Length: 167
Ligand code: HEC
Image 1: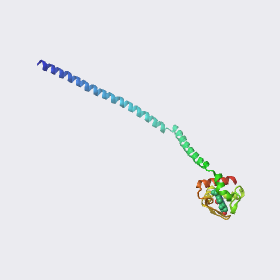
Image 2: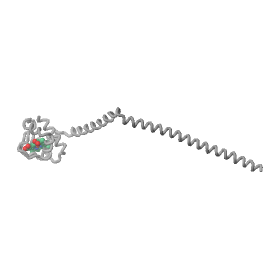
Image 3: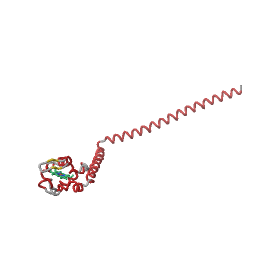
Image 4: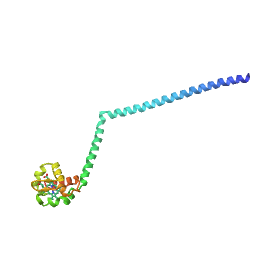
């Protein structure tokens, strides 16, 4: 019986030990959740604050500036592309043959009088007529000056050059 008594004692103290252990574990889990909850809340609060700041009117100009910056960067790229095309070079290669001396009725580059009326039509019309060609009263302007390997932008650059020289 003595041994069974000590068995009972052992079982008793062991179950107390077990229960304590379970309680302690539950407590630690609870504590962990509590902390985690607090931290998540803090993070969430921080995010909310940032989101609110983002919606705040006083900060919107920053966003607009960056958008404007993007547009300016794009405009710059477009301008660079136009600058990269050598309008004067294209003119010399493909247009000068007729337009320098006014051959076959071509409006002579540098002659502001003959160009004034044409320039008055607007750049888009000049571009279109240079790219697609023009059967006019003065003569025949072949499409792209007869050089179909030119891109539309190259022809436009040449037109810009001619107009700039004829004002
Ligand atoms: C074969 C000769 C010839 C060549 C090459 C030529 N042109 Fe012309 N171009 C003409 C003639 C002729 C006219 C006038 C047509 C008319 O209005 O009767 C003209 C007119 C124009 C006009 C005025 C169009 C308008 O609406 O009034 C532009 C712009 C022009 N040419 C651009 C160019 C460009 C750019 C090139 C080179 C890529 C070029 N031309 C090459 C003969 C030529």
